[in-house]
Image (cartoon, rainbow, N blue to C red; front, side):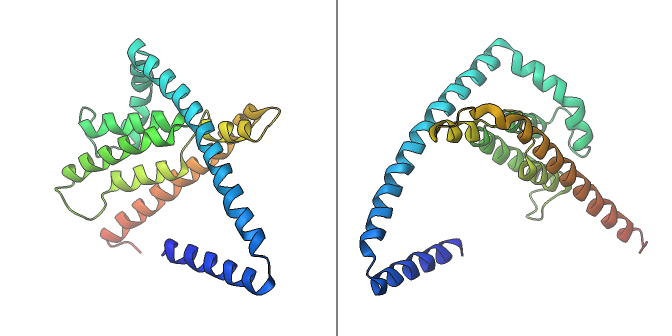
Length: 199
């Protein structure tokens, strides 16, 4: 569906430019946009390499294990249906940790593995279980302490203080995470009440 919308917008733009005699502007926008995209990608690669290196050092030094232990009591309460020693719990905590560090790309593989393990816990059913829904809500809200991608983009565009976004990001993602968890719990308890016959 998204591809169809993009194709429609591109086609409509090109046809409009043809009738208005502005095809040169379209050509210039295509080439300058492509150049800008490549520059942006290289900037993001550098910051991603830096933070992935930091994460690797943290993992080998044991800092990640300490962080994971600190997160474990919270994760056990957020996912009461998942056994504390199950592999899914390890992937969930790795996913949350990567998101906290602003490494969305590194968090995705951990999230996919967590969902696979949660599906096994759910008996292989295609229907999403309660822990799956909670994990999706957490990933969508994504509490972030260090917004590395946004900092990299601000650096690429010449921001005088690219890291000043950190405080705002923590506040905004804390609010979105709290809202996501409240909505998740609200619908969960409402479904429980319906099963028990309450209105």
